[in-house]
Length: 78
Image (cartoon, rainbow, N blue to C red):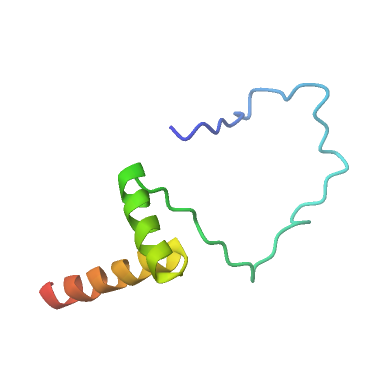
């Protein structure tokens, strides 16, 4: 799966794990926007890095520009 395990209702947590003083939602921030990381194949990253270096811009700018163009092409074709 994703490497995250859960504890069923019948299992007990280790004694050293104590959530009795925990506050639910203490760090919850509904307005927080998270950007998920995107992992590129090594050859793709090298290619984009060389273009970005030549243009003097970030790899993410190149990747976003290419993806936006692909999205526009896909929207026209579907």
